Length: 319
Image 1 (cartoon, rainbow, N blue to C red):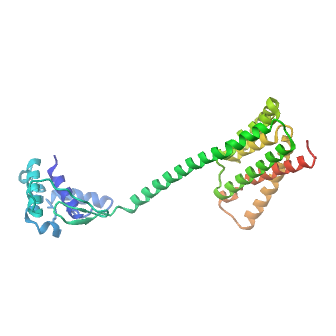
Image 2: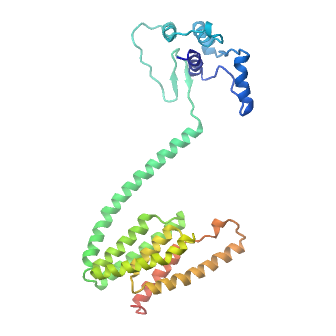
């Protein structure tokens, strides 16, 4: 056992101070560290907690003597002398003693309270982990509630969709509008489109297409998804679109189906060009230099295009 290091650690644990001054940073600290053994610099035990107890002070000096031949070299000797110091300072018998540590302090073996203050980084890391754990629990609870609330509605829509009645189409369109509004709100606030909303919408529209049109409805939605994915692949690879935008666009294709895919694509192009020019003019006018500021959300374009398709469908301009 390294008795020398144990003595220095014992002093710091009892007093909260170091026996040697703190080393300066960089090369100066390394040079100072090398000079200590050359100069035979003795550690300084000047804390009143130690100087007021001669036996404890002598024990620390014997444990950290700069001359190894004069240093205690037996851990059993250290244990025996610490036991004597404890009995003398606490006036106790050989019976075991229980120490009750407080929240902000701990009792040393000589019954002296020493404050323990963790660095701010420790508190920040603990707070971050606690917040991450709370967010994870909230997501789990929200997912369970969503399943319990949405599953019955989805099953009812799936069953009711077999008739493909007017009421069913109205409910599906209202649900689509609510879904589009939710995605726009999320992206404008968080600048991201979560998978649970985009891929969840894709699965929902494909399932409802199968409910209303059978295998033909599912295949029509699947063809629209395939074509939409191919059209969005190039902008995605060129980093003009994010992965969330591609997933939302594919989900919109699944909703409108194969027959209305061309009007949706034309509207997306027109609205995208209009919004792009508007954003460029705004950035130029305000002299924006940050490239990240030049990006604009894609969800409003897809939402407006899909909503226009819904309106054109209801007024009879497209089938």
